[in-house]
Length: 183
Image (cartoon, rainbow, N blue to C red; front, top):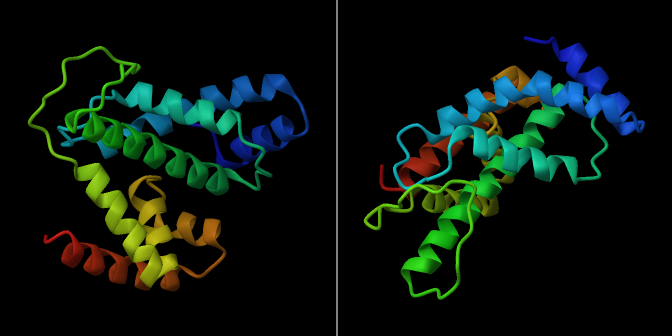
């Protein structure tokens, strides 16, 4: 696994216009992003994307963004945000389709969808939006931890705060979400 310095160096080279750095970066982060995606998708029966498809979709969005990458943690924070966006978008599309949407849905996979599946990802997204209105820091910590798979130290680095602040926000956010989602 490449070191954080190697990933940060690739990000800096890519930002400077080195197209080959993007290829190196994609290879360096693909495995780790796939592990994060697999962990997020495990047990989610309503999600039809495979981990690789989720990573590919998130990477496409990351490549199209004009972000001033600071370091590895910053990159993975954005990857987490894009993975969440992809999952929420898919859940919304499926919900609209169930409610009589008359469009043709094109996805990266061709598996049969279970019409009885619920919308756990969409409910989590809505609860996170409500949490953000109450405590934006707690919502961001949950997002980086859950969707980004970042450790507390990495979340603290990405957010520019202390590890103890991350711990407090994580505890509050988890308790608030448990109550909001009805355990």
